Image 1 (spheres, rainbow, N blue to C red):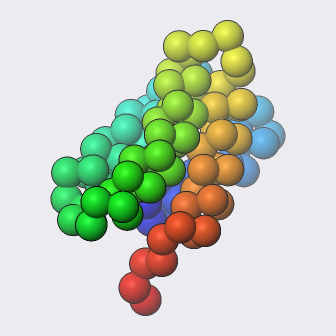
Image 2: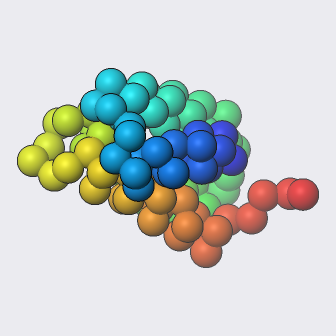
Length: 97
């Protein structure tokens, strides 16, 4: 999730200034989907934590889908959904320092 956070932190200033193209959004969405896939594949959690993780990561995946233009919502809305998901992730999980 840290890599998704880093990618979003880099993109957000441009997104807010409307200087992030549809192509840029699609590329960022691909990055998000790849990193979420990696997390699912490599994260070893107990059953309860795994269930929570899958619920939490559904949100950035949904935001990425919007950023790809697969929704009537704006790509900016998709980025906002990913950002909110990243903010809520910390409510459930902590990364070691």
